Length: 547
Image (tube, rainbow, N blue to C red; front, side):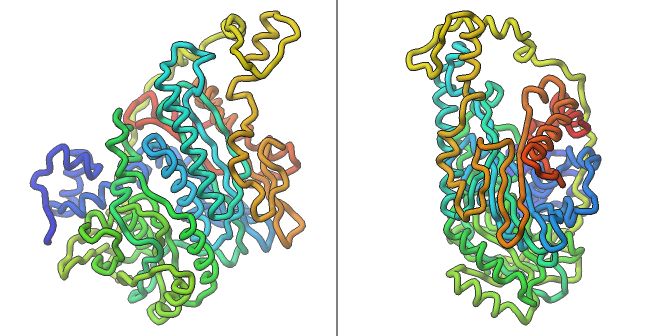
């Protein structure tokens, strides 16, 4: 194979591809040989926490995922539930946290773009997004010990993330109808950027992301492949570096106008007889999309990387397979329908290239410049990824949250009101002063300055604007009903008692829907945790899932 085969790989190489020493040894044992650098990169991405859920999977299985209204549970691009006999809701939430700490504008923009693609690749029309956000403090008035540099960085991250969400959503033409905005020192310099997208589809029009049919063709559609976001899946699965600037190449660049064309072209093709399956190129790029489609269909794929349209000519198979360049999709097409589908994409000025075919042998085989550069079993990359039973430790109450209410009131009441304080006091009692200060806290104040940057009325379905009710409500054109959606994450409660916090997260979202007269039908989760290799972190995760 015309690519490097490290023998043995050093610690730097293993860290680059996202494999531990023991995982590398296990990979060699399963292959019966030493893998080359392309194979190591592919396996490192597919065995990462981000793609394989290798630490969380045993616990996530405890969650209820079936029911009379469930059309699609875990395992596809998004979940789907029946609203009526003729209409289904498709929805998903995910995070883009590490990239948002590095390059907040682009990270937030591409986070929105990625979650939208997960919806329309299933044949659903996206109708709304929501954005639960967490940042460090943006003022040190309530805690003078917070360094000014941290305050300025948190403000920079907030401004960048909000601008990125607004830019992408407004350009694509989707309303951002709700979410959350919470400030706490625990998120300082390491924000949480979560995004949810909601779409609607006729139940019979759902598209699955599965490769089937020996000889069927593989079509890559959308943007050209560059070197941006290489190894992004493994980047999202490790601790954030102290010098975040060094991770900037792991952040992708988005193009919302190209995405809008992808939406319309894909939805126009969802009834095409040649269409077999569609998959978004998200985390781990062409590696995850091709391997996951092959895994679902229990088949193999033979890909010719020379046919992949490139934005940079010098990149090789490693970068091609692991690039996370945005606005790309993979399609499996019947062999006699490729030309017609390519014509439809050309009508939208979208590039498309046939890069391979489905094979019966369950392997992913990559060819470049006439030679095979990777040969890996489909199951090795998907269903046979390692699974860990991580140790847990006893949980303790965080000291920063162990303050009783009376002490909290006294501490806040002793602060001098700053110039321009938005609340006027009729008296100067400690409790009135404390109440005014608490009401003016960024967590309690109106978030209007943020959500007014989003076009929450575009496509004319929004009934309740952000902050108008406890949940967003949208009409469904052509139907007498509507659809409500809410997000909730009681972070402080989860820190104090993870089990109870997990219960309250579901309860609060449920009640938010009930308060506007909606019937709760299903929920999804986006659990943001630090390294599962920390027993205390793992204990909190397990408790929240069980709650």
